[in-house]
Image 1 (cartoon, rainbow, N blue to C red):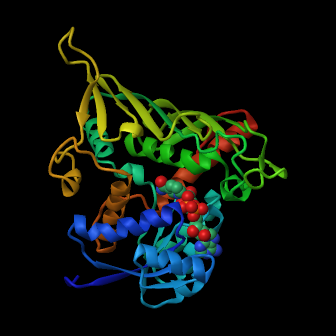
Image 2 (cartoon, rainbow, N blue to C red):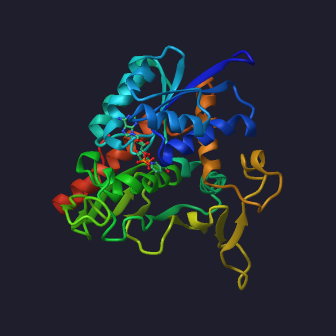
Image 3 (cartoon, rainbow, N blue to C red):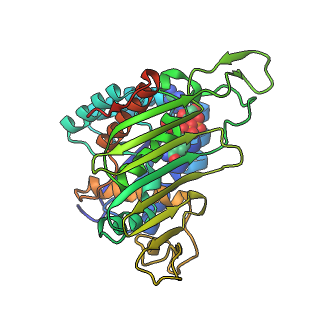
Length: 377
Ligand SMILES: NC(=O)c1ccc[n+]([C@@H]2O[C@H](COP(=O)([O-])OP(=O)(O)OC[C@H]3O[C@@H](n4cnc5c(N)ncnc54)[C@H](O)[C@@H]3O)[C@@H](O)[C@H]2O)c1
């Protein structure tokens, strides 16, 4: 790789995640030494006007109202897909067929069958893929994983994980693409995918699940204040007992009507010699309990993120000053770019996106059938 090698970015979508991707790609070269000079080349959205407005705001050179022309553009080397879930498969397959690297938001697709096709196509084409499981990029999660792998808390016996927010708690919150059953599901597909990814990252593959899903708000207005309502078919809350391949047991919850909760992506890991506790609402902290602390002094201690926890130090030389959500995305982009340059980064790729979807589908199947279900794959 020459020092001035360029990688031109094509970004599809400029909503919440589109802006986050744009921010991460813009900043990654300021925080890290990169294998490429990333060029924010082309942004696509539904209309030319929307795309042009977003391209100007986000610093892209060009805009288009036609995502297919973005993929056909020979200059583009990587395509970032930040559109609603139902569009991921078609866009990713087109990008792969054009030989582009693909960075797709989670959930990778509405179904595991879709994700299987996408993963196979990418692996056949030899392009590098990434999925937006940004919470895995927290230096405190890397620390938790290291503590578990080193045996510091002994044998992991149990994992409790929850991803809970309240953006759908208002029964009058209107219909959106997130409620479209064709998108693959509700809270579990949307935010449950993150906590499944975290469970897998820390404890390993999930073998069997016993799921229960609930639609708590049976209908939503088509627009805020509208009298026209549409029945909701997807889950507002999903819960599952899980058995990991390594023998650990656990529970998972996805909940988008958790009134008052803004960003619980929380877990507790209990081992034979200690435990870990974490909440995303204070994500620069990891709590550690060790049974070998002296009697009378045992308790969860709080470890604050600092330069000792890479790559925190790339953002800030001082501990306790805290990194933010957009920084996690910047780390995710950095790992993806290094993978494109040929390094092994262990980042979440399409195969991981598929494994998460297989777990999601097993939970839905279990809830439908009222029995334990083995996770396929
Ligand atoms: N990783 C995370 O933390 C995280 C957080 C939120 C959302 N997401 C995922 O990101 C994706 C997008 O979510 P969002 O919250 O940004 O949604 P959003 O509704 O805010 O943005 C979607 C964008 O896609 C554009 N779009 C829709 N159809 C298009 C088309 N045919 N061509 C081009 N652009 C089109 C929309 O105009 C909009 O700009 C979803 O898959 C979601 O699950 C991930």
